[in-house]
Amino acid sequence: MGGWSISVHDDLEFIDNLINLLMDKYSVNAERIYSTGMSNGGFFSFHLACNLNTSFAAIASVTGSMSYDTFNSCNARKPTPIMQIHGSIDTVVPYSGIDTVMKPVMEVMEYWKINNSCDDYMLTVPGILPGTSSWTETYIFDNCLNGTQNIHLYVQGAGHIWPGSIYERINDPDSSQRIWDFFSKYDINGVIQ
Image: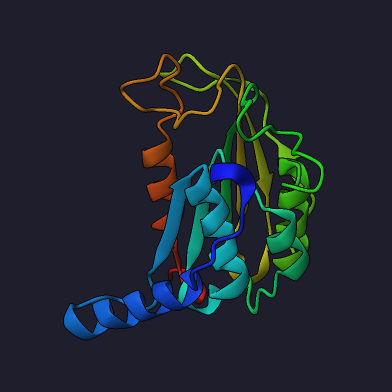
């Protein structure tokens, strides 16, 4: 978040224009547009879900959160499936948030639980994910509108990293694969039939 400042550029207009340009020039399925990113990219994905969510089928944030500005002005106009992946020892974007700067991760998940009319989370039996070495708690918010879910992977011992990166000591869960598995279930209307 480079000094925790708000962008002076109209990033939302830029993304909206980019989507329109790409749809005009290429064969893009307008019902299957997603946003994901790490750190600032995770913050921005939440910002898009709050302000342009009629364009996005689902979003995923890795080591991001919601700034107080985004959280307080969020105007999501439809349910948007959310995936959040966060490490327990992230010191750049702390899991517990930073007063006046960013919300704690579980408060962000609670916001999207309410927005998407999901059930309270169920914590799957924490443990080592099959075929991995990471102790990961998986929080599943089920029965959301349009048959969707919100999912939060809380990776123990992970810092400000993209879990699954070949450059990181903690290489599980494979965040890229988990995000694609999540995205591939949804289009703009919810679960793909």
